[in-house]
Length: 453
Image 1: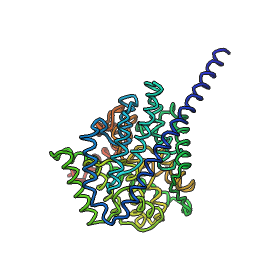
Image 2: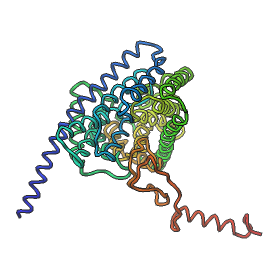
Image 3: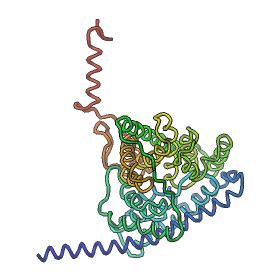
Image 4: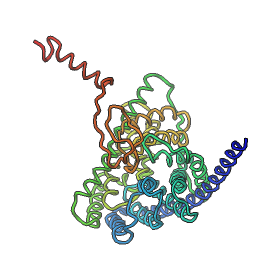
């Protein structure tokens, strides 16, 4: 009896401790995220007064490059990926200077037209603020990691207005195929509190419940499966485009400042050739796609290129909003092919790309409920899981650690960071692939076949 009472007492104290700590993180991160987003809105409002504001993009990328190379070199790294890396490799320790660098560089990049997102900076700002709180409380090891994960969750929750999806995202994004249940309670508390604080401080969010969902049929369900495969391929394309951008940047033997200016001129040229849809956050285009309006079929391709060049050549920001842009516009492009309502398919693409590119199918499925309503959620969840599998062992956040293989016929190192992971084929005697191989060999050796008499 005494042991049982002691156990329950300890658990009660632990619950109370983490509710209080998570509430503090939620308040701090909700406030900091609101300041950041309002600063971005203010910068966007100023830029909108000038028809060709994007001509300043070379200077914006140059300024961002100078900050990280000359002024704050210790704060190098990109948004949420840097926060994930710190949790895996440094017990969640994040230098306070990283918060300032994240704010300033993202603001400059996005205000001058660079293609990036706002969730990555919000996640790292949240993680950085939580790390500072851990320093104040002299936390180390497991408790520090938990607090920083709460910072990521609350940053995502408050920037997109999805408290449940944000809470799950912070736990799910660390590993591919695993969730840290020990952070479940504080992540939910931090996410909900940060969302409420941001709402109270005046942040508004986009919600678009899908009112028209086709009656279930085998044909419609097959279309959802086909859409999931397509979104997985789009996710693959986006992640590989980002990787090729980093590779191209490393191959150019010039100072970072020179590369930033060249990249800015290149993006300005592309803007004149195509349009301004692919600059900045691209929220208007996302909303148009989700409302069923027509957008260029190649929009998801162009956004991937704009984002890769921006982030690889001196610019800074998150990858979440570009993921949503690519997903929504890819759904719009696919709708006439599958003869499915474009608004519905854009909504499914919106979350399915997050599931694939970030390896977070559960958070993405919950986001579908929070943003688009319960009716579309079952179909969105199926597309999310398929997209997650189709993307393979790669991610927009290469610091993620692989906790599972997406196929038993894939040879890949479980437990390693995706940044160094190389997947290969692993032959298994009892598998679909081996069965296909045996059938092929039988046909080729059959009399009258290609190898027959």
